[in-house]
Image (tube, rainbow, N blue to C red; front, side, top):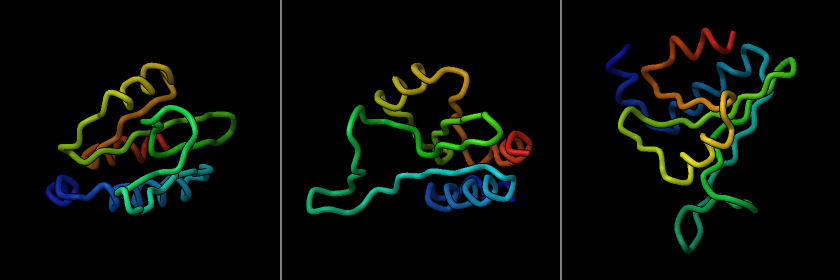
Length: 104
């Protein structure tokens, strides 16, 4: 299983985390990029680098950046992480056991 986790794409990982969050009763928001003539774009107003998922349950909000095992956080994403503070999470596929525990 761990080898599979290491090879998960970000899309597979995102879908797994979304399903886990829903299973454990979290409200989930994910803004998906769309292909345009200028490449992949996520429509937004404001600063780039917003985390991939927003989860909320019982007054708790988490903002989560999802990366593959080799994925790198961009400068814009790092700025968001710093601004968010303790509600920010950076999750990778090999963190799935810890993720499940936190979502419970």
